[in-house]
Length: 341
Image (cartoon, rainbow, N blue to C red; front, top):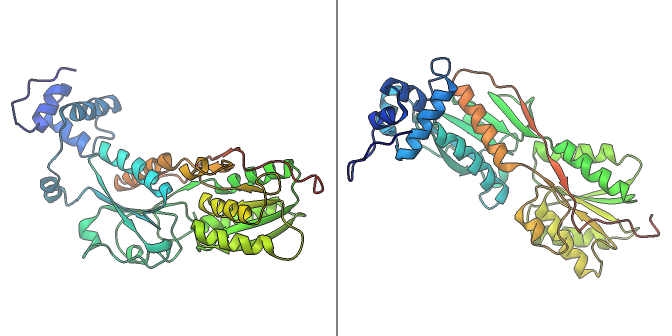
């Protein structure tokens, strides 16, 4: 690819991109306007995008918005900005968006509960579409009544109002966890569940209950933070009756709280108590012992969600997606204590 000598201080234009890619300006407009499907080959589209990146070309989005009636902006709604998982979802979504001349605005709906307030005076005027990740069922009422395309991530595929769904196979993740612990001889379980009302946590609970039929299982709920999880787990582990030999947690933050509670009670992990998490956040390898947990492909999740939204905006009907997950076994899980085994 030949790059013409730039003029000092000059901002690259679409003409420069066309010249570098060896195509017409009309082709550049089609590709960078995401209108190329069926009119330009995928190879040519890749060449144009590569030329734009090489030159550092950025389209004048304000002018384009006036011409096309589109802001080329998507909104990503998440339960919280403090959770690392959603940062990775945003990274994946923003990467795909940037390749198509879109921007992504990140907006938190507190605790994933609703309804989320309309973040703009007029969402329909300021946005082209909405991605919503791991939200409670009533959290998006501000958008359901609008004409904005809505792509739901990690949510009930039978739920109304969404143009497309992209999910993680969280049920399989919980099945992998329980099979691992049952294989280690565990038969008495504590499920430390998230207190947030969300489809994804309901699916995890149902999968765990089905997999542990015949075993002893007690469920307690905690807000999604380490401090509350430590207190809730401490009370559960101190309750009268046989001590569970394994604690299955809906999230790595909850699992970290369980490990702290166990240490306060003089219980060893995993010799006395195995602990598992979910998500595989960086926290999972920051605690000692490191957490056995389910790894969720958060960046790919965001990428697939943004790809689905772009397809909807192009008039397509994307098929539902269920991304695979995997179990990562580390030091926090081990054989059940000898008497239990």
